[in-house]
Image (cartoon, rainbow, N blue to C red):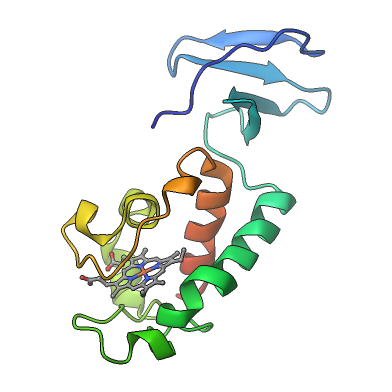
Length: 149
Ligand code: HEC
C-alpha cells in the first residue's frame, strides 16, 4: 500500500504537497517531514525515504524477538527451533551473498505479505498488521540487514 496522502487539519508546521510522490508532507519544527497515514505519523526524510525513528526501531526489535526468532534464530542464522523440520528452511541472514541478492522491497514484501507473495514457501507467514506501519517494517528490514554486517 502506498504511503498515503491524507492531510490533517491543525498541523502546526508548514504544509507542502509533493507532486512527485503525491504525498502530503507536513514539515515539523525541526525540518523533518512526516506523512500521515490512517492517523499514524510516519517520518520521512526530505528525499521521501521512510525514516526509522527510535520508537520504530525499538518496536521492530521486540517484534523480531517475538515473531521471528522461533524460525530465523536471534542471530538470524535460520536455525530457530520452529524451523528445524521446515523444508525449505529460512535462509541464513548472515550470508553476505544472500544479502546482496535480495532487495529491500523483496524483504519488505516477505514480511508484510508472506513467502508466497514473493514466490517462496508459505512457511514464511505474513504480518498483515504491519501493512500500515512502514516505519516499523523498514526497521525490521534494517534489523535483517544488520545480520549481514
Ligand atoms: C514459522 C516460521 C517463520 C516465522 C515465524 C518467520 N519466518 Fe521468515 N521465513 C521462514 C521460511 C521457512 C522462509 C524461507 C522461505 C523459502 O525460502 O521458500 C522465510 C523467509 C523470510 C524472508 C525472505 C528471505 C528471502 O530468501 O528472500 C524474510 C525477509 C523473512 N523470512 C523475514 C521474517 C521476519 C522479519 C519474521 C518475523 C516478523 C519472520 N520472517 C517470521 C519462516 C518463518
